[in-house]
Amino acid sequence: MGYGLALAGVYVLGTLLLYLSKYKRYLKIIFLIRTKHFIKIIDAISRISPRLWTLLTDISLTLFFGGVGFAYLSKNNSQNSLRRVFAVIGLLTALSFYYNMIMLLVVVAALAVGLPSLKKRNTLADYISGSILITALTINIPSALLGMLGLSLGVPAVYLLAIASIEGLFGVLPILFFLFIIQAYDIVFMGSQQPGVSPAVPDVREGELGLSFPGTTVFIPIAYALIAFITALVCHEFAHGIIARAHDLKLKSTGLLTLGALPIGAFVEPDEEELKKRPSLQKMQIYIAGSFSNLLVSLIAGMVFLSIYLNSPIVYSVLEPQGMQVVGYGVNSTIEGLIDKGEIIQSIGDMPVKYTSQFQEVFTLLEPGTNTTVITDKESYNVTLGANPENKSKAYMGVAVVQYNQILEFITQSLFWIWFINFNLCFVNLLPIVPFDGWRILQELAVSFRVKQQDAMNIVKGVVAFSLLLLLLNALPLFTKAIGFLMEILNSI
Image (cartoon, rainbow, N blue to C red):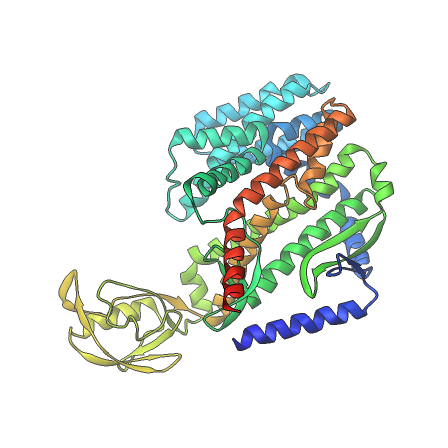
């Protein structure tokens, strides 16, 4: 309750200060906080290698839109640039199938399909070969990543092929729409109360301040939430600015968008009139740069997280564990309800248990029924050990633990939430809905494929309307709960 009141007080005070400021305001409560402080940094980064930045955005277009992305580049791109995209995607796909000669031959055949268009662009050949490459890449990458953890995908091969084929032919949007449609069906016709979409809102759980997503169990402690969201917003908006400056497009400002005192977005503001006059490819590269930067950051954070997880013995040789953290309970646990999850067990009896090997050794030395002292980072507990269900001669406490180091915990938790927020923001931003970049991207795609301007706008408006309807249907459980909450308040007055 104290955290909630403090949070409300800070929000009200911050909002009042913004009201008294000269920042531009919309709908009385939405503020646009502009600054030019970061433009020089964006300029410096953009000058490092403009061709590299634009090549990365071209690659991202093919990853997000599959063969359609290749076809778009074929219509709007120079031969040399598209060749580099084919080379990079082809190499990645070939490397992912290094152990499978049959699939490697399929990749080589896909590249061969595009050979007739090396001298003169052939959009159909580029579309076919690009679709095959992205399909092959999509089939293998998830399995390879899970294989690193000793896990399997658990999806029937026919389903995986179907998903990969859709991604290869059209990109991620049809897959996102399909998932939203399934959830909307469950909500409308099956009575599901699980929302398909949910905003991040301030919350307090078990005395800890953070962000939660109503209708879900996801809760991000405030420190990790700030790190993850700041990383995501800065990378996203800087990417827009870097590509804009790589094309010598003037930036007017950078800044924050807030709902009262609560930041809900960031922005880099290019000269819109100048942007409208630029070629379609330049606009597309600027629009898609944000999502690609989020995808890249999520991949880097995920890879570092996995590297730490897979090499924990090496990591713990540098960072000594401080004990064993309680993460769960077993059947007939003797400490459930006594020692809380998250507590760090430092010793059992007079034996330290900083390492997993020490923790396991304790239960070979003590006998079932022994009354012992368990010391954690919170306090000391008297615990009577039970008998192991699998071997009655061994002592048993019924607890799941992991080695814990405070510094390493902070690093790994930060990496996990950076991955989570960036990964989700990447794909949410591709949805063809204002104010996301997806609707601008869709507009450039429609115009490029010989669709009249008016027809292109009608297509974009139709897709945007359909997307909004899907999001509203997916959010129905939230509206239902909000109405129910308001009715309870009114009835109690």
